[in-house]
Image (tube, rainbow, N blue to C red; front, side, top):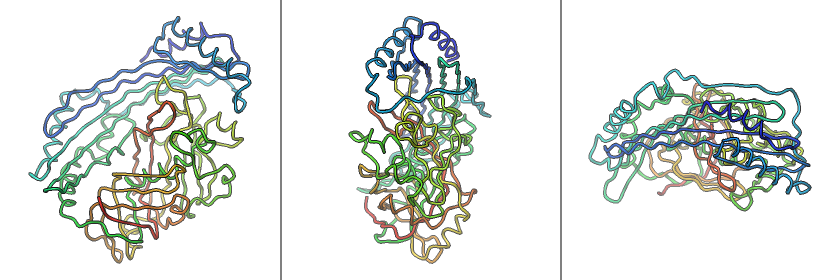
Length: 479
């Protein structure tokens, strides 16, 4: 993928006459390794490379993507983008953002302590075989798997204003799963169920506890099989970080996307209960709630220095002391809404335009230890690891199910219960936040497949969070 800089220079020589152009070249190589029920899976490899040309002309905007990065292929994409810009001139819903300032030159590349290529494929598979064997240590474990995925990703942005931004990163995603079965009853325990993802190399797996988690996951699957169902009723709810991340994602992240607030997702993934007039005045959560857009956290899934439109990314508060301050909107949405936003215009690949996306969306740490949070609870439950979710078209009413829960009575954790669920309303749920874990309890998690846009874009999102304690939540059992 070192050819990206040459491609940028190649396009500059054939770019169409226009007010402004940008070229985004993206390449990725991925490898997936797995062991399922003791059998080594076929190795899955993918290689994707291409370029997106964006043109501003006469107040209109057009773009065209191509996998042909020869001079003739790039020139053709430039002509197509210019034609679309001419067609859209006079029909745009808002003026295009105006590029200003000195040209930006930026070049970064992740350097993990242990690169993915530092260990042979055979050795990585051998270690996965060992992990899988540790998952299957009882006859009642009916299904088990261990897997590792890695993506090497590079992007280059170049513009007619002289900008050149190159960013390269590695993404590692581990997975472990054990399902225990007895008759018609099956219970599954996983390593985060898709929520464990990091930028970096193989060294990230040590931090995530991947190589030591298999026995615990198998034991907890067996424990769930014998556990009673979760009780039903209103009680205090303590969410572990691996459930907090999806709660943040669905009931804060998506509602605050500015293009969604403006109606762009209406016929695909719904709108938002948040409106533009809420910013600066709406109490989204209790005074304990501080939510930041922070693409500078080392190792988090969506860390970057510039977004896919070349805007510099920096930490911004979206919610401060419970008060809603700022939406998740990139440069064009900010111009359209006449509102401040963040550098979060992102694309999943070279053949998609950048749209408003979550990046690293984090809940800042509070002041309590985990035991301190538990000590506050007279009657409640702690839930771990998301297994299901449902949320309405305005991202307001929701229901989540988790893999595992433990009852809390008089400040002490008690019995494990299975099939735990809870429901609430985004607009009030966060106002019932009454405790947050301290910095020592924060876990860096995320998702590799957040879907949005037409045509669809599945993209990585990071969420760092401590455990959170909520009052008066409707909890119920059942598979």
